[in-house]
Length: 345
Image (cartoon, rainbow, N blue to C red):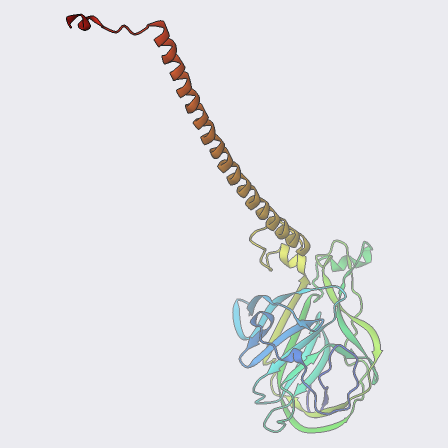
C-alpha cells in the first residue's frame, strides 16, 4: 500500500513476448481495446478483461459481488475458462482518466504487480489502457504468468489443504484513487521481494481444489530494463475504488457445473471434439435421409407405372376372352332364320 512519499514505478505496457523498450511513454497494445461485450467486465468508464495467448477470454456468470447479502456497485466478478500451459495477461482501460489510479494485480490472492495510470489533464500523452502479463525477477529478467495444474499428493502433511480454498483460482484487479505529488523518469531499478513468487501448489488428493488450475510463473527470460515513470504520492481511500474479479476453472469443470451453457442438442458431459463429431454425423444422417426419400419416391412412381401397364394388359386379355366365349356360344346354338314369308310370293 502506498503511503506518505513512497514511490511506485509505472511500467510501460509490455506484451507476453520478450521485447526491448526504452520509452518512458507506454504504448497501448491491441489487447487494451476490446469491443466484444462477452469478453470483459465494466463499471462506469472502466473495463477489465483477461487475454489468454493474446485472445480475450469469454466471460460467464457476470455478477456484482455481495458481502453479507449487500450488493456493491463497485465490485463485479465472472468466470473464465483456463487452459494448462497457456500464458495470459490482465488488462484494464480507463476511458476518462479524470484522476490518477493505482492498480494492484493479485493472482490466487498474491500481489504480483502494482502500477499507476496518470490523469489525462496533467499527462495527456499517457495511455488509458494497461496490460500486465509478467512479473520482473531482476532489472533484466522477467517471467510470464501461465495456468498450471495443481499438484496432488496423498501425503498426510497436506491434510490441511482439504477444506481450505487457499485463494486459488482467482485473478483480481483492484483500482485505487491516488494523489500524485511528483513524477520523474528513470531506468528501472528492480525491488527484490516486492512481488510474490508463483510456484506450483501441492494439495492433498481429497482437497476440493484437486483437478483445478492455479497460476505459476513461466520460464525466466531476458528483457532489457525500460525507462519508468517514478511516481510519488499516496492513496486517498482505505478501500479500492473498483474491484474486478475473474474466477478461473478448467472449461470442462465449468461446463459440468452449468457455468458454461451446454449445447441444447446434446445431453450429459461431452467434449468440444465430441460435439463437433456429433454435428458432422447429424449432417451426414440428414443427407442420407434425403437420398432415401428421393429413392422411395422414384420407386413409387415406377411401381405406379408398372401397375398401370399391367392393368391395361389385363383388360385387353379380358376383352379377348369375352370375344372367344361369345364365338363359342354362337357355334353351340346356331341362329335360325325364318324364310316362311317367301312362300307368299
